[in-house]
Every structure is written in structure tokens, then in C-alpha cells.
Image 1 (cartoon, rainbow over the protein chains, first blue to last red):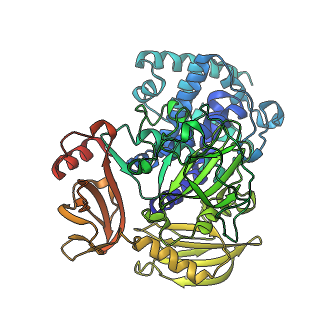
Image 2: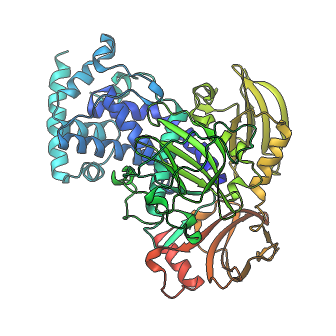
Image 3: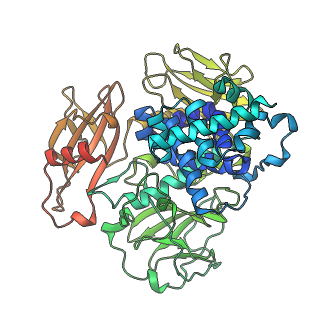
Length: 164
Length: 410
């Protein structure tokens, strides 16, 4: 109990300070707040389970990000979307459709127009700053495929954004 | 085109987050399930300090909610009580005392896999449990002496919960049962578990709930640097104690943990809720925060400090200047010891450790234990027992245990 309480404090601090950023990453990856909320909750739950080891190694954020990305890939492969569920404690989340128009940025719209793996590659490489090798490891694809996805994704993004 | 800057500025913030206590509770629930599996998957199973946590399966136990009059409950805070239910065929076998530690079977599971979250097994030695329809059952021969209904409020995830004090053959166990898709079981031994040392059943049952009570969410705010802070007080990067400006300080104990002035116990009210907090700056980083209880704040502080530094009867240790560990009551004997083994994941800066071999003197053999100390005071321990898969094999030496721990962890 003592250890758990001590760990909870560090866990709470981490979640409180980083969940906003991680929520946005999840949203950029999947394009839907409900899914993003599920992804983040799944990742944070697994982080809690693995907290001692992950916190000891100082890779909390990388761990959560990996779970978000991999879970999203798994979901896509299953080709079935999880049923929409309210957040814990009954917190209902606004859907993508409910977002104010001003919140739906040109970048986001362009990003969501990319094929899923191109989108993930661009987010990991050009927002989160992962290397080609790291991105390949995270997405489970070769470095050559990462380069291909990234270049094609960037090309499309640039084309869309330059027309705005 | 600076994409990183575009991402930072154009990806929206999104809707409100799931409350932090709910995130913690989801994590704890997952942890309970994982421990139910993991305990039997390694050759050395950790009997972790707080309790043995096991899984309730969704098996085919028939169940009958018994509403008969009370037989043993005299607890002033207990809710409805019940007499022993008709024996359940699947629960009528004698309870092997040796198995009371809980469920230690199941497949290996990777921490990041989905499988660990599947509630598919149940322990063979459960003393009480929910049936699939939510009826409460207890094993034949088990007496229920106290009961508190629904100590935990958990929205849709758990349909019902109950805390029970159970007695079998003179032994007392505390059970917390959850019924629902994500239901689980928490078992505490009031005699052996350090986490509940000196605690009454009513207190134990009471403390199960606060985190999930919507009325008791941790207060949080952003500090001057924009860092989100949880609680009524915290230590900043310079080690200075910071107290929320809107917190009304009710009582305060300075440095109750004797951490060179860097610990504090604080009773403070925020938004109409009084919170009791015990925390320290580095290196201890102890953090306990609860809604104010019915008792005296100073007594609560004493209890928290005692829980940090003492153990229940039968499990009380002393640490000599040279690091030698001894059991005070003589019930257990340390027959071998490796002081400060190379297990950095077990300790934090300022803490010491020892791997000891313990003999109970009852002829039941010896078992290893990991002990953590701070300033020559007992700080925590993990008792290591052999998994069923290794039972009957030759007992390991302390050096072999250490090698295993270094290579495989717990």
C-alpha cells in the first residue's frame, strides 16, 4: 500500500501534466475524439500496470505513445470500431462532428485525408520528432516503408495546405 | 512549412478529460487482474505487501443472495448481514490453509497484451464470491462476521460491491468483492498484511471507496509555472512546500517523517471538502491523500507514519547498524542474508535493501524475502514464495534467488 500510494503520486503527476498532449496525439492518429479517448484510457491503464518499470526507465511518454499507436493499428486491422461508450464516470465526450468549425483546422482535415499509415508516419516523424528507425519500430514496418509513407504523406499535405 | 509548429497550434485541445481518480481506479483494477495472473507465471511469486489480489471469474457458479438474519455481525457500521448460504457444490471442498494466499495459476501474460484484462479464471480457494447473476456466495464452513455493502461506487464498470469479514477455522480474512464485467476481488489478511496493520475492518472498508466517489475527486490546479498540481500541497522543484492559495489550512504537522524538514502532514479544506495529506519532497516522495475521516487528524498522521515504519505483530523487523535484519518477536529467524544486493529497481536513492532467507521454525521450510530499509528503519518487504510449478523441487539458495531476481525480476 505504501509503495502503491507513492507510485500513484508520480502517476497522477505524469497523467495530469501530459494527458492533454497525448490526447491530441491520439486524436491526430485516429481522427475521432471517442476513439482517441478510448486509446488514451487504454494506454494509461496499461501504463499504471507497468508503472514501476516504465517510470524507472523514464520512458512513460514513449510507452503511452506506443500503446496508442499500436492499439490504433490493431483496431484498424480488425476493421471493426469499438462501440461508442461514455467516458469513465459517465463523462460524455464531444464527437468530432460536434467540434466547432474553427477547431477543425486545415492541417487536421488534410491529415485525416491521408491513408492511416501515412498519417501515423507523418505524426510520429514530423510532430513527435521520432527518427526513421524509431518510427519503423513503432509502426512495425521497414525503414524504407516509413520513408515512402512519410514522403507521400508530406507531399499530399503540402498540396492541400498550399491551396488554403 | 514548419509542420511541427502547425501540429502544435492547429491540432485542437479536445473535450474534457476523464477524471484522474477514474483513471487511477481503472489502472488499479487492471493491476489487480494482472497480479491474479502474474503471480503464478514466474518461478518466484511475489506476495506483495498490500494484499493478495485475485480474479473473480465469470464461471458458472450458482448463487443465492441470502437475506437471512444476522448471525455474527455486531459491527456498528455494518450493513445487512446474512447467515451462511446453502452450500454451493463448487465451493464445499475444504479450504487448504496453505492456499489462502490466493490464486496463483494462469498463463504467462505480457504486460502490454490484451489477454491480461480478460476475466476468465477464478481461484479455487475463494472463500466468497459473486455468482454470475450477482448473488453473493460463500464457501461452506465460512462465517461472515461483518459486511458493508457497496463501499465502492464505480459507475457502469461495477454493478455491486461488498466488503466482508470472513472467518474460517479461526482465521480471519477481509474480502472486497466487485460484481460486474470488470469485477475483481481484493483479499486482505488483518494479521499478516502490513498494509492493514492495526486497521479495523470498518476502516479498511471505508478506505476502499473515496477515490471513486464523485464527491471526492482530488483538487487540481496549475501552479505559477503552468504545471498541473494535484492535491492541496506539493513540493516544488526547489524543495519548497507550496500550499494552494485557496486552501484553508486547518491543521499541520511539520516533518512527521523526519525527512530533514521535507515532509508535512496537512489538513486543509478546498471547495468545501477537507483533505488530509501526508507528503514529502525528494527522496521519499511519500504521498497519501484522503478525504477527512471521522477521527482526529493527528491520530491519522500517527497511523500513517506508523504504517510507513512499522509492521504488524509477527512481521516486525529491526535493522542493526551493520544492516543485519532480525525479527523482533522471534517467530521467524533469518538464516541467511545478502545485504544491499544489486537490485536497483527495488530501492530508491537513500534506501537500502537486503535479501534474506527466513525460517519459520515450523518445519515448513525456508523462503526468501526482500526487505527495504531507510535510515535503519524497516520500510517495506516482499515475501517470495515458490510457484506451484516449482513446488517439490529443491529449494534455491539465496544466491540462486538473487540471480533469478536480477535476470527476471519479480
